[in-house]
Image (tube, rainbow, N blue to C red):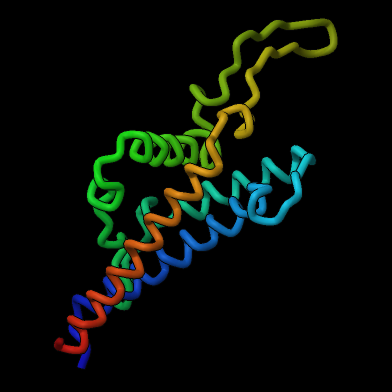
Length: 166
């Protein structure tokens, strides 16, 4: 009989591993080294990068707990990334982009700079958010996803052994 605490951790870790794999799949399409072609349509590049950010961020976004899956995977970002400041900074940046400009519309990410009444209505000067302007290093982001996915795989084996009493 599986441990009632360990099985939900295993299940959430598995779900998180799939999220990181999904993010990797979008980033591989963006990376010409993986398939030999450059995607020059900026709408497609923007959509793929946005999708990668959303998929990567899911394990960290406060999922609802369930009797069969805990809300958060047992992920220690510092440990997974071995204290590598560049990867930790990228991780933090990805989550910030997701939380302020992609999944939400915080004013700081999408400010309105000026409002002016004109004869037929109004004129607004705004700063539109464009994820492509954030200069995210796709190769590094892919490495980040790979590290997280690898950690989840290792954690699944560890939890599986606990579930099976080994």
